Length: 142
Image 1 (cartoon, rainbow, N blue to C red):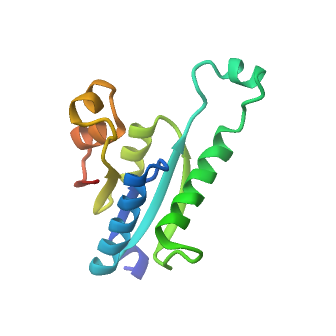
Image 2: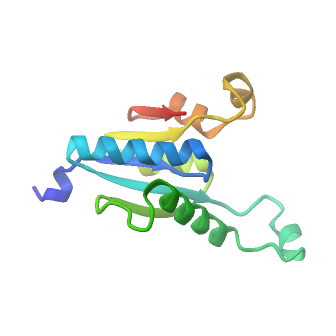
């Protein structure tokens, strides 16, 4: 078995919030302790009324997500992220895309909802959705 195949894989969902930056730091810390690696994931999708946004000149959703991911890595680690941290950009609905990407991982790490638990559940927050549907352990970081 190769070293990469046997290493512990930790997936961290990144949305640009301070909680997701903290989740990235915690995921990296755990990866070091467990001898593994982190895949920092930002998810983007085209909005339902994409044509309306395009008509207003707003059409760079993928690039926006790329910048959020890059900024979060910088906020968490500065100019040089650890060697065991890589970045991924995925198109899809956030909770479903994270759940699919995290299949087979040791853990999925996400930031907590910013509105509080009850409001987060009512709004269908990503963290609440992944906690309730994940097939791998989920760590929610404040």
